[in-house]
Length: 195
Ligand code: IMP
Image (cartoon, rainbow, N blue to C red; front, side):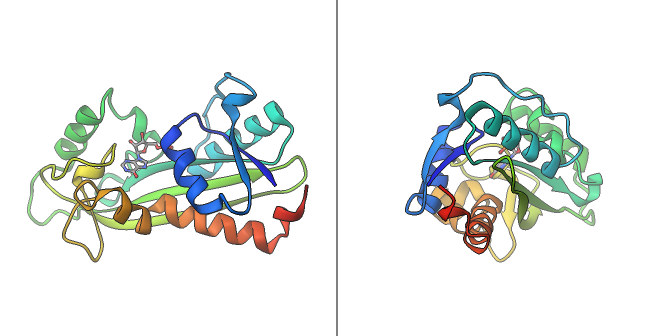
């Protein structure tokens, strides 16, 4: 089966191939179009669907896309769907997050990373969501990964995502969980057999 993924991110495509590579050949939407869809949805789900539909209309092949973000309890879910637009660089995004959370010892610093994956093939459409719950610490720790990884400690661990490293992170992350749910859903709906 051929599946088109609505991302240009090579790291993501590699992670997707690790999970779905046996069942499907994964192609990037870049092979069909360089146009970027406008992500103006109000949730991870809406934005993932926008990107999945865009990939389908560019390729006319079964397509999927993901959208993710960090949701912090004490900030009423911010930065959420605006995670990548919270500031200009990862460095500045983390600085803004820590500043907004402040340093009061009793503050609730719980948060989760959410990843929604949407599928669209012109007929069938569905979404799944994976979440990884944890805590935002007060200072950056670790150097691997990207985004908010240096300040996020997943529940059950003493290290940040950036200290755990890619291999460990990929076992428990929101994206890994969403990908497993996505694979299960494709199997349940018999969509791997569709071509
Ligand atoms: P995207 O939808 O996967 O591009 O993620 C949107 C934004 O959410 C990224 O630019 C990051 O700021 C943040 N984010 C998503 N997933 C992660 C992660 O695994 N670690 C750290 N930050 C993440």
